[in-house]
Image 1 (cartoon, rainbow, N blue to C red):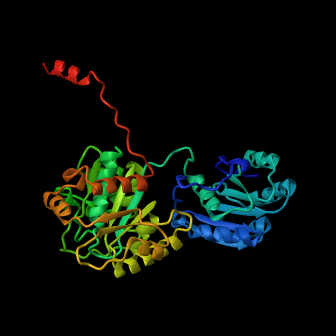
Image 2: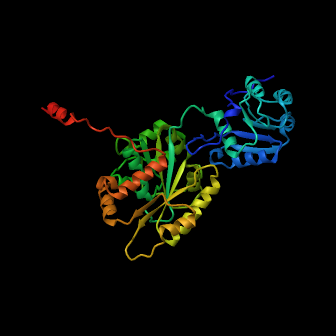
Image 3: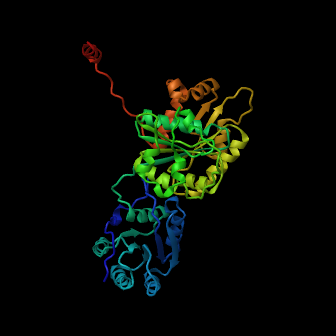
Length: 423
C-alpha cells in the first residue's frame, strides 16, 4: 500500500470559520478532483473553485465518493489533490482508502471529508498519511484553506498584504489617495511599503514622490522570466526609510496591452518580500485590471459625489463582492467633497445606494492638494496636522488592519542630557 504525502492534518475539533484577519495563501497551479456524496459538499467545493485564492488551481467536481474515485483512477493518472467525501464509519473508510491506494500515485495528496467526528479515525488517517480530515458540513472557505495548507505552512505568517486602490471614474484623485495612503502606512505605521504604479502610460507616482527612477515596473512586466525578489529589489526606488516606489515609465512610445496574468509575477514577488504593497490601479476595465482587483487582499474604491461615480462605484463593488464571496467587501471613500457651487450627492445618499458607509470623506482643498502636487510632496509633509492627513492615516490603519505605532515619550531628563552631550 502506498503512503499518502503531507501528514499535517488539522484535528477535526479545531476546524473553525476564518475571521477577518485569518490569512489563506493562494493555491499554486495544481489539479484538484473532488468525489462527493452529498449535493451540499459538491456545491461547497464548486464555490471554492471560484474563490480568488483558487484562481490558479484546476478543480473538477463529481459525485460517487470513494468508490467512484477508485474506479476513475484504475486507468488514468491521479491529480495533485483528491478530495473524498464519505458518510461511512471508520472501518469502511479505511477499507475504501486501501482500495484507492492501489491505483493512486505516491505524490497525490488526499483530503477526506467525513460525517463523523471520530478522533480514533482521525488518528488512523494521520498515521496512514492522509493530508487532511474535515468534518461535514464544510463551507467553501474550509475547502480553500484545506487545499492551501497542503502547499503552504500554516505556521508561517504571510509577509505581504496587497491593497488595491482604484477610481470609480477618471479624475477622482484615486492615485493621489493611493500615494498618500502608502506614505501613511510607511511613516505612521512604520511598515515597509511599496507603492506600485500600474498606469504604465500616464502614471504619476514618480511625480508625486519627486522621483526620477531609471527603471520600474515595465522592466519586470516585459521580462516575466527574470522576475524574482532580487530582480524586483533592483527596480525599486527608495522614497523614505520604509517606503519604496515601483514606478511606471509614463511614456506612450509603445502600446501597453497585457494578458490577464501579466502582473502576477510582479505582485507575487512583492507579496513574498514586502509587508505592504499598495497598487495604484488605473481607471480602465480590462482582463488584467479585473484580475488585479479580484486578487488583492483589500480594495479601496475612490469616488466623487456625483452620479457617474455613484453608478460606477456600485458596479465595481457589486462585481467584486460576487467575485470574492469569502473576503471582506470592497471599501470606498468619497473624495473632493464640497466643491463650491457644484451640486453633489450627499454621503448618506451614497451610502444608501452602496449599502455601506464610506470609510472616509475627504473635502475639496485645492490649495493644499495643489501645493503638495507641485512640490512633489504628500499631504502629511505639507500640513501634518491637517484633518485630511489624519484621514489618510485612518485609511492606512483600516486597510492594513494595524493600529498606529506607539511613540515613546522622552524622559524628563532627556533635554538636559542632550545639552550635555552637545557640549
